[in-house]
Image (tube, rainbow, N blue to C red; front, side, top):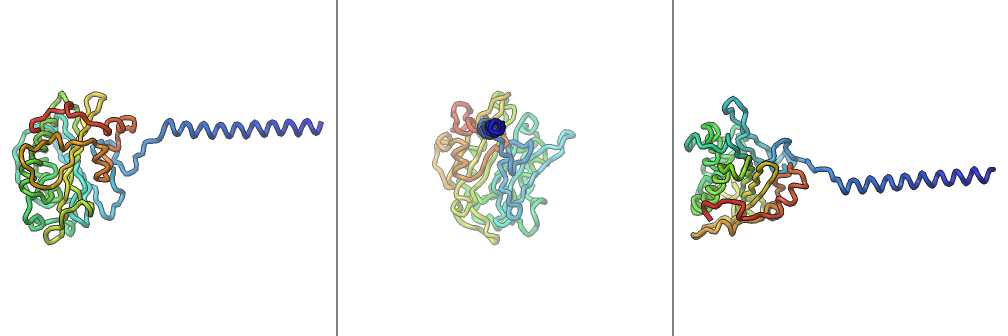
Length: 290
């Protein structure tokens, strides 16, 4: 009888161990099949905003809003580097409301009230360069206040005139066409910037040693119904000869992430983000300027 009890206890113990083992394996398998979305340093409900650095000492997340037609509208956002006095990126959306052209250029040059006074730039910091808009004045013409905000110095980058007023402007004109193309998008999500990483800077300029980016970039995501398509651009900061071959500057969002170290559109579900950012198709986009 004693032996039988011991034997039964042994069998029961073995079954319990096997149950624990397979339960653990089952949990591991489930985790591999259904990985959790990584929403670290993302802004809830804001698909256009790249993943933030998480460094709140060096960087300040700035969200500019306006009141338009009785609603609070997110005009554009940025992650501003307080020590370099240059933003890491700017981001905005375009839909029927914000893509409209209701006002003209305001030329309302001003300091950004959300940037601490001792971290701002001044006109002399752009000596020898254009005060190049990152969010273009032409991108925000749905109301006067929205356009005025594009003239904040925090939205400026030192750009060569032959770059800012030529190839970069032509690319921006294309993006503006996409912003207003309702057959392409319900919403267009746009991220722009100039590189400020030490190995991607041409020089430091002006009394505050503002970085002059070596490259400028854009990442664009179009949502139409339940489908998405994306395209990105990477341009060396220099003078270009015509024809500009904008299509030749196109790359995938994945490639742009590798070049910049920025995670674009992280709030997309991974199952959507991976295939959408891995490829681009030139024929998906209309080209005012090629």
